[in-house]
Each structure stands twice: as C-alpha cells, then as structure tokens.
Image 1 (cartoon, rainbow, N blue to C red):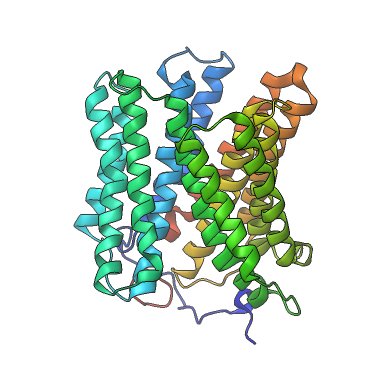
Image 2: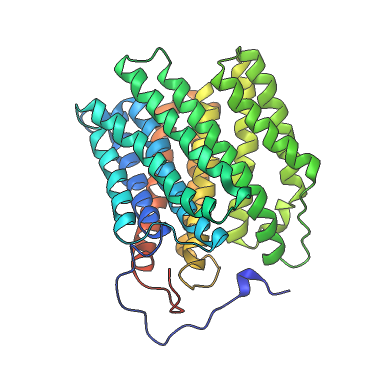
Amino acid sequence: MLKIEDHRRPQPLSAPTGFALWNLGFRPFYLLASGFAALSILLWVGQYAGYLPAVHVRDPAWHGHEMLFGYTMAVIAGFLLTAVRNWTGKSTPAGASLIALAVLWVAGRVLILTPYAVAAAVVNAAFPVAVAIGIGIPIVASRNRRNYFFIALMLLLGLAVLAFHLAHLGALRWPERASLQVGLDVVLFILAVMGGRVIPMFTNNGIPGVQAVRQPAVEKLALGSALALLGADVLQLPPWTVGVIALAAAATHAWRLHLWQPWRTRGTPIVWVLHLAYGWIVVHLALRGLAALGAVAELLAVHALTIGAIGGMTIGMMTRTARGHTGRPLQADGFEQACYVLVALAAAIRVFGGMLLPGAYLETVVVSGLCWSAAFALYAIRYAPVLSRPRLDGKPG
C-alpha cells in the first residue's frame, strides 16, 4: 500500500506564480487564524503580566471569546469549506464570496474591541451562520446526509456566541462563561468526530504495520459521552453530574485512543501530532471531571482542551491539509515540527506547570503564551507563500 507520508507528487522546475489566496477556504482562514493566534496571545500575555497597559484585551471574557469564536472558528471554517468540496464534489465559497466571509471574520475581531457591542454581537453571530450556509448548500444539494450535522453544529456555535453577547449586554440571564463552555463542548465534539475519521486512517496509511482500529461500540460511547457532556452544560446540571459524565468520557476516549496505537507514531511527526492532541482530550475530560468534584482548578481543564487538544489538532491539520491541498508531500519539515513541539510545550507548561508550581503561576502563563505565539508565528511565516500561491501540481484549489 502506498504510504501517504512518502507520496511525492511531481513538482515543476520553478515555483508557481500568481495569487491563489481566495481559491479555497483553507487558504485565507489558515493564514488569518495563525497570524491572529500569534499576535493576540502575545498582546494578552503582555497585558496579563503587566508589561503593557491593561486594556480591554486583558479581560478574561475577551480572551476566551477570541480564542474560541475567533481563532478556533477560523480554522474550523477553513477546514470545512475545503473538506466539503471534497466530500460533495461541489463548489464552496471562493473568490468574492470567500473574501466576504474573511471580511466578516475580521470585522468581528475589530468590533469586539470597540464600544459597539450590538454590532459586535450581530457580526460575530453571523459568521458561523454564514459558514453554515456556505457548506450547507453543497451538502444538501449533493444529499451528503452523513455530514448534515456539521450544518447544525455551526448554527449551534452561532447561538452560543449570540448568547455570550446577549449575556454581556445584560439582555439574557445566562452566564457568559456558560456560553463559552457550550462552545467548547461543540468544538470538542467536532474534534472527536474528525479525529475518529482521520487519525486511524492517517496512521494506517502513513506507518507500515500499524493497525489502528475503530470499534463501533467504542465509537458510539466516545461520541455519545461528548454529546452527554454538551447536554449537561446546556441544561446547567449539578457539578457532580458533570463530573461523573466527564470522568466516564475520559475513560472511553482513552480506550479509543489506545486502539489507534499512538506509541507506533513517534517517528512520523505529521501523524503523532494528531495522536498527542487527541491525548489532550483525555486529559481535559479527566481534569474536567476532577474540577467538577472540586479536586483541581477548572482553568486547568479548560487549557488542556484549548491549548493541548484544539491547539494541537488545529496546527496538525493546518499543516497537513495545507500541504495536501497545495500539491506538496505530506511530510513535516523542521518548521512544522518546531510548531508541533512549541504547541505541546505551551499546553504542558500551562496545565502541569500551573498544577505543580502554583507559586510560579504567572511565569507559567507567560512562558506558555510565548510558546503558543512562537508556534503560530512560525506557521504564518512558513505558510504565507504556500497559501497565497497556486498548487504545485497545477490543479485547481
């Protein structure tokens, strides 16, 4: 069987010319997401540590909102707008319509820093709805029922961001923190679905002799437990109920990951980064359960998901899909491996540093943030020319 990681497409003698940033969804949104991830966290860390004047960016609500509904939403949009074209064989937004989506996303990042709170609410809630329409038209037209739920998940994210803003405006008696948690639960479910689809396949195709398997019963339990946690947070169930669900989910997802044989991937960075990211899902769920029972701080669980799982999965998929969809070999070079290591360090320092060195909490936050910013700055520098130029093989996209 041909190994994905060894598959080298014929490349032209000279680099392609032209501007291709608006050809397909992953191009602008991966570039915007990486630049925003690097700059926003650098500014936030500077203000959190007191090196810069404390302004709106230091607000924990801004930080959580922008990492979830800003950075993560951009990566999800870029991935889905690209993947849906492959799944359905039909066009997704490109050219002027893709520019309009990118402008809408950028407007949300700007408005959240202004006094125009109503405009910020409308624009930020409109973005996931616009993405749902952009992927929904080809999915429905092709009757691709297997992926209908992605439309619903994007609309649910739109509701979560709207609820956040309405609560912030005092128009809804619903905690802002609850909106962020529901949004995180939706993203967790997306990671669980996509991880189950691609990680075993990439593992088997990229590493000879590995037999990563998906057992139907384990798959149903893993996805069902993620949905149960989402339901518990929507209904605001008692902490002990959330804790039991989260701990049960952690055990299920740990068994699921074990079936994929992560220990066999250590020599293939473009594969192990996805396994490591999925391992952070297990850590997140275990810490979420312990936090609900009062054993650890809840922020440790949050950052295990946001930095470890979301950060690791997104940087892994952003490198892999950008390479695949620009006609490049699916192998991680030194730049990309540095990105993987820096994101992993950011997660480990933020979660375990805060746990083991409570007296140096501020220092762990700063170092973790610097690692994160460095990782995504490297990605932006490395991939700006890749994302803005045509494919090496001359194919559209």
